[in-house]
Length: 321
Length: 239
Image 1 (tube, each protein chain N blue to C red):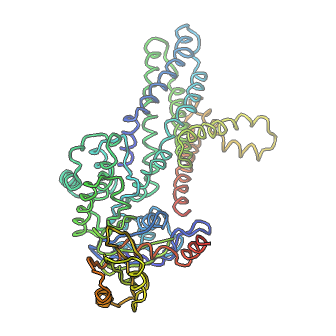
Image 2: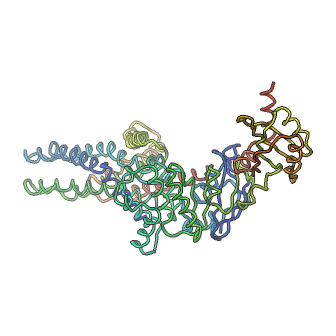
Image 3: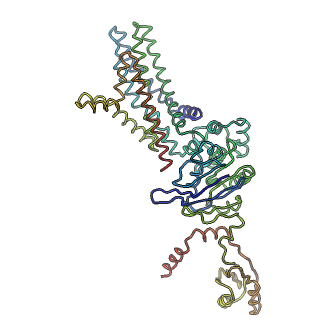
């Protein structure tokens, strides 16, 4: 449905997007994840034809965005970072304007009513947009993107500025959209990607760091196993004993609560140290009162992928000096 | 194009700018007309259309930039242009929609000023209608060119005030160069200046003469600036 090939966008010698390629299949929800300034919005602006790429190719539903602009634009609904609403219009006027602007041929009344219900803006339908709250403006922006029933829906940070309840609603809405549309959304909130997307493309500094189905993303970076263990016993000795255990790469105490101390234990990849750990502790007479395996959260993955490891080290070294 | 035209026209009146423009324009021209045309006519002397129309032109130089200042500057500032530029609408029809919306407001006001003449026709001697038509067509052409220039300048900035002041500056220069002509000996420079001068060709209409070349000149000025506006957007896209 969407094909992006070797996309490059540079301003002078500064690269906003540097050689990005990905494809999105029909009825998929893909999340573009990255910190601020990673190139998410630029990528989206190029996909929608708002900006032109310095080089590379974008195809939407088989239409090249440069050669066959009108057809490509017709199959896209776009919600930019700031909802493109006119403050002097009412929601009704605005949606009718967008309907005409996109040259829709669907039944106007029915189509707009449907969208208003789906985005839950019926109660502000006759109000002036300038007087609406941020959350409502955002939803009017989403409604605008849905007009014309485009095959591809591109949402730039769709839940920004919404309250927690609205965020849940919008996420549900996006998931429902995914049944009939191809959706690309950008965000820097990791839980959002986990909650909504089928696939995630992680972008940093204009490059793709990872492009995986959401449940596989952990594999992209997991090199260690991590345990959280609560153990009763003298902290120094416990630490020493665990650190000398075969395969343990790191062990630190987190917090002490009475005679129980919580430790973080990391071991080499693919090595299960839970049994040796239990044997060790029981042989010393230190009761193990809790043990949790900690899967790497997307947060960890994100940091691991986006922080330059060499830079991280040098920063640490400086700090030690 | 019609969607943008309709929205733009409605915006002129929902934001109040259209009313302000109409009120000030009609107030000014009405005052000037009664002072310089109607009173002499009642007094039995010649009515002075040239003075009246130079005041109309001054009013347009000040007021039309205010009418066009927001057309693109505001869209750019509030980021609503992303909607227009990602919609399946060509840049040309986007610019034309805005141009014709401003033109409609202006033409409506100009049409309203025509009612002044009925007063003269009713109570004084028959005016020379040829000259009157000439003036009205001339002012309409001149105003269209002003609007095209205003829209172009508005596309260059996101600050409405600089768009308005910038347009006024451009208009004053383009009208002013016509008056420099008599001081210049070089025929080449004079030809170039007369091409820039928006006022030169207006004068031909004042003699009640329907000058097709002048009409064509104003139409091409409009086309040129609409084209330049499209180019500005094209270039921003590739920047």
